[in-house]
Image 1 (cartoon, rainbow, N blue to C red):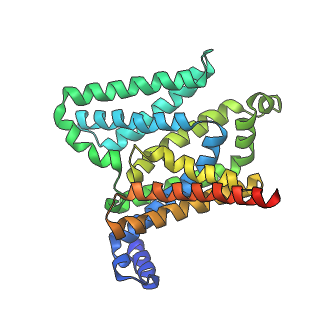
Image 2: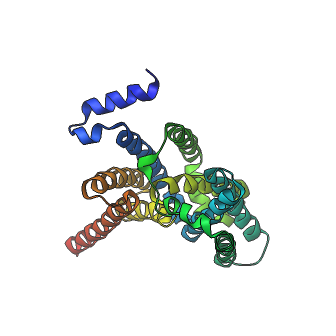
Image 3: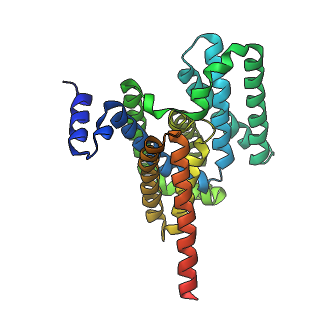
Length: 286
């Protein structure tokens, strides 16, 4: 019996419903939990750095990365990650070495990568049939090697966030002031962009490239409403991300809808509830 078989048996032994004890569902729940927790934590920095459009560009660059992989006969997941990483670092490079605004640089990259992807797909029309699973994601078909890769990414990413959290917040809030305090803002900006590009690429497996930005933004946005300090901000985002993932998976299985869509709808509901809670607190204080 290997490690995964042991984990499947342990998890299945505590689950009350037989349908939830299937190996592929447990594997999907594990992968989705890892990704939603990670996206919740990364989302704090995305909101802080005002990089929502950046993450959207990375997710849409995956469209071109996938098309290149299909065209060249290379594993699309490999070209997706490599191309997303290349675009992410390219955006930071151009932003830091030109007078153009961040939004302008991101807009240029966004439109260019989408145009390249469309050109490839239109030239090889047979490729479009293979893109659907990447557009919407399918966490239920995750394999054990993919789960292992997600675990490695999770451990490395959490270690990075744990070691750099306060400085990343500082750089995101005021880059010039952080630089004056001898903080290497270049390192933090490049390293975070690279990590974000990889996380986005992996998250496409769960919710698809159309919804991956929402997976980053919604838990973090809800956390900003509910948290009273920067420490609680991270924990709120992580908890809301995990709950969105697990509840979304359960709902998708119960009513037979796309898992990615269900996860984002749950995260959106949390955002609505957070706003209603804030409104209630303000009315009580008035």
